[in-house]
Length: 75
Image (tube, rainbow, N blue to C red; front, side, top):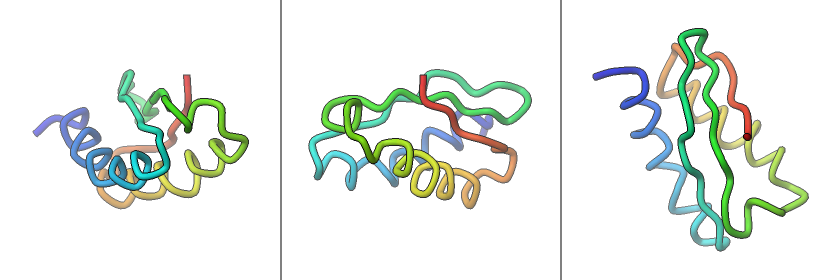
């Protein structure tokens, strides 16, 4: 399984909680350096708490599930 597939699996674990709040997350890219680029959509796209969701939620879960992940960035 590639890093991108592992990241997608981990995002699928986060997705239901985002969708419950009217938002979602899309995987944009996974760089060789371990940087994961995502796009927050729906209610998450304009939410003032989205950076906290990104770092404390999505990034933390991705790092737990995919050790190769070094950082998560919203694009």
